[in-house]
Length: 368
Figure: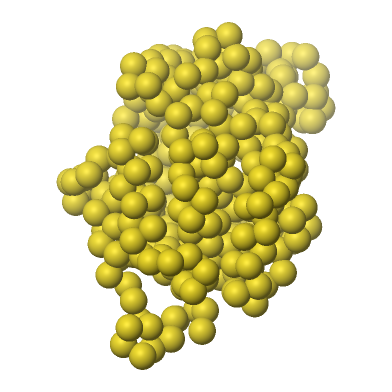
């Protein structure tokens, strides 16, 4: 809601037209104009969003989830803004180049252009972006015994994940939370374990976490997610196209926007995508919860026979990490639908504690 009101205020105050005029006075070349306009409007939005960003940061500190000092935090914020300005300027340039070529089909052609941009972002994130904020080292450097156990799990799953694709991240320099993830695809795909897990979880619990992340790897969740995000983006752009036409008919003069290909229309398009993305959140989160549930199932199956009482080990990990991360033990169903991209802790604990197809003489769904 704050972001929506913020962008609406920028439209009413005609901030973007002022930046557009500065860019057009500086040069007649569109490429030079976007290098002036896009960073100005993007940085303005980021600075005006600082109150909610700082509020969120203060809450994290007050509850002990964040232990990062304010100096390093501001350093990360500046780094994030530099990334935003670089990537955002490229996206804005592509967007308006497409709009100038076809004002009736720009939503479709920009969607086509965005697919390689989305894929490139997923590919480069673990190689370039994440190392700007955290340090990574091979898991084998400090935990060679863990790597040996992990290799047993990998072989049990019929996979080959080389040790050089397993990393430890120094999350403990900034947070007390426990987590792990997989990122990238192709040559950049890797499994990352936060050092907080390796410090606070037992080796058996850490193996389950790795099995869960391996599940995302094996079940091709990242390429599937890229495809789903691309399809959702197509729908959002199509709706934005029609809503933008309606808004321009009503408020074009008041907002000093000449037409849809005017740089000054950017806050309007950002506002529309922001609202539509919020409305699409339950769909995307619902898909994510399915992926996470499947990865939980895979994690149990792939450590079965390697870790005794695998279901109980996983249940203890979810209870431990839930308490450590201060997860809501009984979230409202509405909150779950809108904001949870993972199943709730009670749901996860119940599933892993009761999932045991082998006792019924059956095999696992993913790992025989």
